[in-house]
Length: 437
Image (cartoon, rainbow, N blue to C red; front, side, top):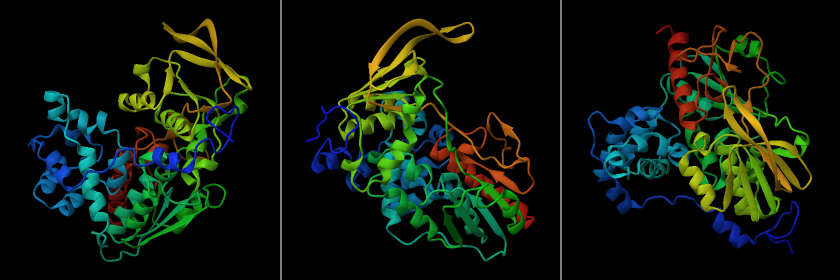
């Protein structure tokens, strides 16, 4: 029988009941009474800093007041007017570094209003009722959206509201993008990502075509010829290399997360006894924590800089350590072996990071790399900035009639909420451009 102590990469380390408990909702929702109590803590600031801190500029005091006055469906509408994927963002947004960090209660008491949980309370309840938006009169305009992730879906929904016909093309078998394939399972239980997509599509006027790869199955030129405008929101498909001997034995953390999210039986997903995750972002934390949840005995995150430089929030780092994940900082891989990874301690110098010459090994039968992703398959003619598609404030690219947003566009923060804002704003600019308004 396979156990957490069994060496090698093995499936079935834990029984079904244990796995079900471990992968249950990480942050349970508020009930009605809890929501009222949480809403009562809001000062309903006139010049609310939480609104400024929200990338989608949701009127947070308003929706909390609507909850407090017993109209949660109105609160959901306030949220969705700015962020049509407000349900998912309520689950995965790093509120601790955005709206809740800016909350006046946080400054005064060290305990902010639970904005994320209140947002989930409002949107989850309202999603069970008919779609609250209706389309404008059909314009006859056709728009192509490449990528069914947060940016593409937000763009498509806003364009459909304006009466345009939208076709969304995505390379994956299912729509949702990062929300479907790239987020820890315990953060979005009960197939919520697909439920939210289905709810969003209820507005009508949006057609999803999956399994279509830009550059292989369709070209940008062809999309331009057949549509009045094109939005690119295809995310980042490439994974950065470790540039260390033996790196072919390291698996992309995003592939591990995607495979686990799509697995009908979590117990069938193999995981090592001794797992090493190289990187310091949210992907690294999600991979490491889920390896522990699957039954890995020892899981270690190794990051080349200090812990304060990790892009994963302090909250996520604490969650990782509370799950039993060890974090080692100031170390970079120099070789990946069959049963261990060799690291070298790093130090910040005048010329940046440099190795100290001191090396150590971490036992590993499974290694994940989570050191960032890259944009691949960029159509010719698009100007790049920092390896991503250059855009102006409205999302316009260097090619006339083509907009971009989300992770593939320069200037983003690689967050669902930021991608939603960029897709929404690009849609408004596209609407003005193709209708002449």
